[in-house]
Image (cartoon, rainbow, N blue to C red; front, side, top):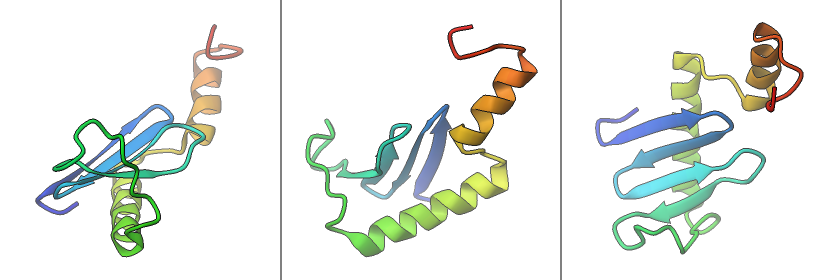
Length: 91
């Protein structure tokens, strides 16, 4: 990660912020890009309009996830259910 950015992972969802841009995705959905300086409520998805920036952010997220051991939710969920001896997310 760069000094002016951060990345996070929530079960099934992901986010990375670099300067005033935030790239986010909910589980099972595509990445969305927002300019937090002019769109703090995340209403104007810029995905596809800033391809080089998106790719840089995706690369940084992937590097961070690899370094910190973040597993894709499709991998983590079955492992967690097995470890907790649960049949599904509802118990």
